[in-house]
Length: 197
Image 1 (cartoon, rainbow, N blue to C red):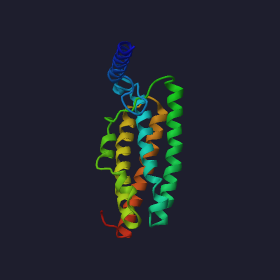
Image 2: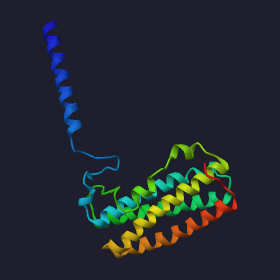
Image 3: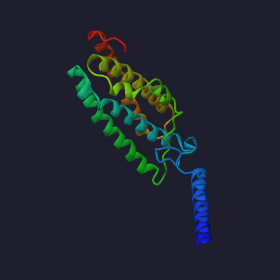
Image 4: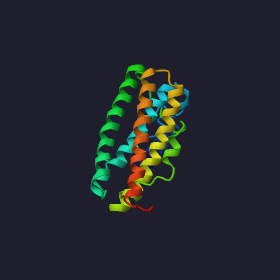
């Protein structure tokens, strides 16, 4: 019985290691976006824009959700609430278009689209979460303005490249809204005499 038990254990170990190896080598999802998207650049530009802008908006919503319990200024809290409402609605619109135009297609999030990587550089959600009051507001304004500038770059690119007129119109709206928010937050930072942290 001892030999057969050892033999069974060896076989079980070999099967487990073989399974783990095959899973590790599997070309499945490349990231947590659910991507079929090991090569998102092979998808059409419009597919890439829809998924990547939705992902970009999700990051802005995460930042904005911190403001209510951390900001020292009611104006910033109100803007953050509006950001959450507006961008969640736009995420839903982007996903609706994706389902209509590209049913059953995997994620085409492409971090290399113009504006996407630039908007993420130097971002630290951990530092933002740990901040409160004026320190939070200064960091939030700097991070959100940088994030918005990335969206502006992406939207301007889409105005030139997108095939669907709905995406062009959507992108022009993003440009108008986010330029205004950048201007407003920059003015607040000066008025409130916020210093970088």
